[in-house]
Amino acid sequence: MRDLLSLPKAHLHVHLESAVRGTATAIDGLLDFFDRNQRVRDALRTADDFRRVAAQMCEDQAADGVRYVEVSFTAAAHGERLGDLAMPLEAVLSGLAAGAASTGIAWRVILDTSRRRPVERAWRTLSLAQRHAAAGVVAVGLAGDEAYPAAPFAEVFAAARDAGLHVVHHAGEAAGPASIRAALAVGAERIGHGITILSDPALVAAVREAGIALEVCPSSNVALGLVPSLAEHPLPRLVDAGLAVTLNTDIPAMIGTTLTAEYAHARTVWGFDDDALAALALAAVDASWAPPVVAAALRADLATWLAS
Image 1 (cartoon, rainbow, N blue to C red):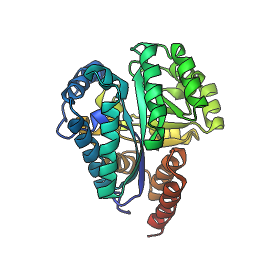
Image 2: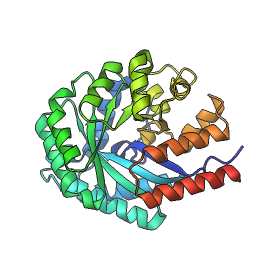
Image 3: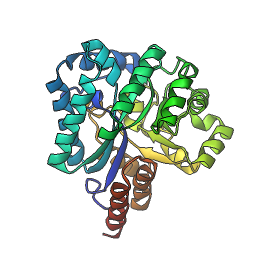
């Protein structure tokens, strides 16, 4: 069996605020997570705070064998809270640049906004993304409680696509396939989570046909009480259904996981051999919005890993 730490990995679904060092805790379901995660967010107050955690995230991801990471960040919420809309994002971009310079990791940023918050915040998120696209912001999307509808945000994400930004929404995590359909209706090019899709065969076929990737986060789903155990996680069935499945951590520091650990679970819990593990890693590269030169290098290094 090949070494999983050295497996060249792309990481598509990881929240900066949930990757802050020293935040591991026992979580009692989704609502408890939202509360604990908000406390971490509230502790980030200065530009130095945001720069530091962004640089440290690069260090931690690189140490885990991640070569490219798409960092989700709720920039507008922090900016509103601190009375300076641009400061948190600009500090994060500075920290990511510093972290990349010291580790060699490549990155892009996804700005998310909560379904629970006003549409006006989503417009502010889009404005931030447009103003900082040249600095590494590549996409926008919805996160938060899926009980809140996606439809009110349709104009925002149509405008995002028109502006050349990508769109990725959380859906099909705590809610059913209808939330995935709603996310697709408001522009989603990838689906964050999507684990409930299998109960809708017509949707499975449509998503498979369109090549829309799912960002699956097994340990997070179990920690948040959405799946009873790793052994019962639907990831193997998602793969068997022919869907484009990528493996991710979501909230790694808070639950004490790493992307390498997630690949190890795929090996030990679901019996994935090295060819299947490399296929998961390649699916993440193919679904990513990495610069072409970064994606090409990852594909070549994955082939080398398999040949080793």
